[in-house]
Amino acid sequence: GAVVSQHPSWVICKSGTSVKIECRSLDFQATTMFWYRQFPKQSLMLMATSNEGSKATYEQGVEKDKFLINHASLTLSTLTVTSAHPEDSSFYICSGRGGKYNEQFFGPGTRLTVL
Amino acid sequence: AQSVAQPEDQVNVAEGNPLTVKCTYSVSGNPYLFWYVQYPNRGLQFLLKYITGDNLVKGSYGFEAEFNKSQTSFHLKKPSALVSDSALYFCAVRDMTHTPLVFGKGTRLSVIA
Image 1 (tube, each protein chain N blue to C red):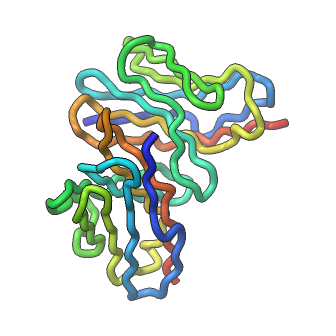
Image 2: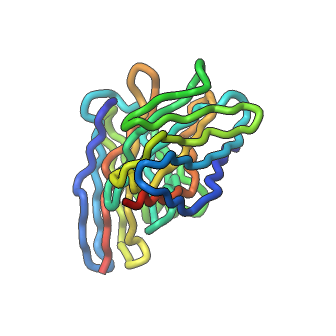
């Protein structure tokens, strides 16, 4: 299957700072990128969907001003958690959709810890 | 809207015994069904999928799943469990349009030696 990378794999930051997470599709063009959030021992919850060159569509209850998503190219999407707080601590997983069969491929995830 | 139910939070099985992890779904139209496995602090690993064709789908690591349209189920199975199969398993579904995958809550599989 196709490969999606995320960077960093883990990050610890102070409350009030902003953190950027990068998601790259390495061997395919991802026309659509998805960002999921996973709390401990829970399922993946979709946060937002973004199409290359367009504004992201956020799921209900997700603050778009807090979770800034940029999908500037067919191989790169970024999620910026602005003014992070401890409750933003979570595992963030990106997913790119594309390739021959327009499938979804998942990144390895980024563990964010806000102190 | 699509939805997935995984009725069991935890499944325990002895090594060497067959295992089943249950999944039922709800979707308008024909479903695209997936199983993923997640190890601690890791991303999702794709196991198998059903799009069309044979109802019995074979995937990675000896896993298989059977699509049952009348029961709207897509249970994951393996004939002989290994301790290394212990992990969190997610069932996911989407419809034929460009909607994102919707995940079940996950089932933790514990294989005991």
